[in-house]
Length: 426
Image (cartoon, rainbow, N blue to C red; front, side, top):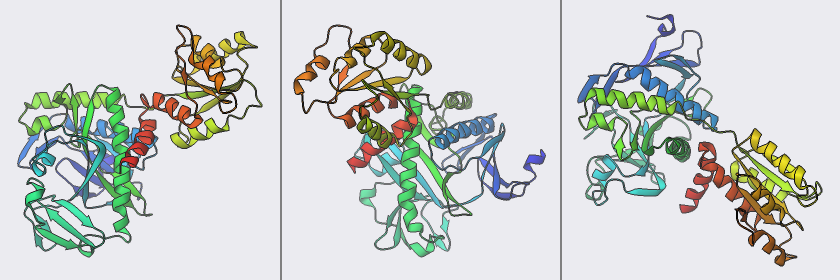
């Protein structure tokens, strides 16, 4: 056995082993196994190479989530089948985020069709159990669906494979029998928010690769200093992903697919997630003079993007220095091709259309003096052919439009914008 794995075993599950790091007391090593299971272990096989594919997928996902500012239990990949992570105490909950209705959700809600879309992500909690036991209580099933009533301070448990409308809780636990941390009641809001953010990042990353993430299971832990982390793993056992309507994930195994087909899917997912990244992007804010106040646009971009998108300020009169203006624009686009230009212009309302005619990146023009001279807007609206300029009067809407264009290719920015939108749905 490699020295890396000499640390004592802290926990072992069906598909992984967690060891204490032999050199770092606040780190653990998560080692994947080739086991694949379904139906709470009723179905069990060895899938050659799965440990490496699962580890690579998890590491790819955690690197992206970490880059997006989500606190995750990941330090670095150590070997093809292992990675290190901050040591934490795992909370006894599985958190499932759903964009569509699949699997057990349809059993609990039989009136809905497979693929039912949730415009606002649905978050569910399940109590993690083993051998149908919770402390001294016998359970009807493992990992029951749970409902937390904060007012009553109670956790109600339901069978996840039966219609909710026909059930009453088979067990109600006081929170004192479940919670082990001070303030754990507040963790549910935090876990829900972090799970949503993580899903949105991965959802956009999959969209960019031609797939559709429809649901995902995550777990959380608490570090020694009290930080809540999205921990454990996020691999091909953790989600359902569709490509051209077909599953790429463990659902193929659950449905009785051949092991070689399952293995090919796991290898494909490990490769695809290796493409996940945050692109280099920017917004150019163009004004006619260095004395022009462009702060309404700058502040809106910073607020809406959570300071994740850099901006470049250019002050150049397109009417007085057209050659310099186009040269400057070409230089900027050459340096960062994924760029959007916002022309925040006063009397030179024709600058936006002129810039638009000289580039292939989107140009949004904002007539800054519209309130005083509304007739000037026509120079930005009535344009000749091959001038695809967009005109927006409100600076904050121009900033949002530019960010939405960039978010089409940016998982982190998509997380911020889509998250804010879905919060308004609540």
